[in-house]
Image (cartoon, rainbow, N blue to C red):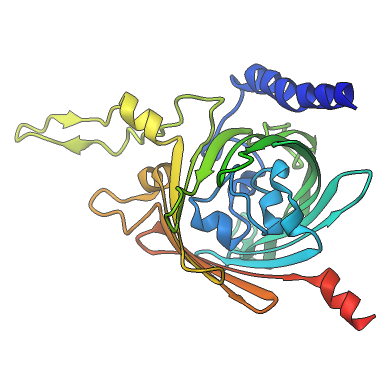
Amino acid sequence: MIRPVRRLFRVLLVGPALVAGVTAAQAQIGGQSVFSSLHLPPSAYLASVGGMSVSGRTADPNMLYGNPALLNADMDGRLSLSYGGYLGSIKQSTAAYVRNSQKLGRWGFGLSYLSYGDFDQYDPAGTPLGTFSVNDYHLSVSNAHTVGPFTLGGTARLAVAGIAGNHSVATLLDVGSVFKHPEKDWTVGLAVKNVGYQLKPFEGSGREPMPLDVQIGTSIKPEHMPVRFTITAHHLQQFDIVYLDTVRSRTTSLDGTTKTPKKSVGDKIARHFTVGGELLLGKGLNIRVSYNHLRRRELRLDNTSGGAGLAFGAMLRLGAYQFEYTRAMYHVSGGANYITLTRNVDELFKKKE
């Protein structure tokens, strides 16, 4: 039993690390890869902790999107439905379910649909041709095994993107591991996400890279304190993820001399981190707040940030139902609202029987 576990551990941890190292030179962010919607948080909890978490060990089945190794016994039999409303008519709907098996480990299933809305279509002469839609689909199947304080997991994902009847298809893989302290409320997680291949590119274009993301993070609740802290480092496969628009230079002197923005080491490092805090007000109420520095730096205006990068959320448990809401600030013009409803449906069916 020990040898297969060790082999699995090597495959899940060493293998993805090598893949990440080989593809780091090709990994890009900021609109230079397809299926960038995979970076969006699909649930209220993930949105409330900065948009990502590889160490948040909760009872929310949506955590299979954060790290497949986060599947745990508290999720067994639970079904979660989430809705995210972004700027304009962009909307995201997600369903996730977790079930345990005796011999094959713990399984998680997820389906996410993102609609960008309808757009007006015109020919080269400007004649209206009606409307067209743009959307993404993600179908995920996860599996996790726990050995002592360690959990190893993987997710196989099929992604489909459509623009006016033109479709692209890709297969992706997430792998991760989680260490849970046997006595303290402390977890450490590692995940290599979106390692994949574009099976079918959009018509008229070549194959493009996937939105690779290597993440590591930790969550800890200090003893005798009703607070849990979470910090996550992301895009570790690429140190410099700073984008500067050199066209938008500023005039800094009376003689018209312009000064273009420059990159600093501190800003390069800070853009890799998200931090979050959760106030635990009993078993049925939690208040959350988080900060995403990359989001703030990329979406703020020159004279104001509009709260970009901040997120505020709450969890309320009423009987067998768990409600979660998060307001994530993206831009001065507005933010995104996330709602998640979770219930143990296995118990519901057993009662009916």
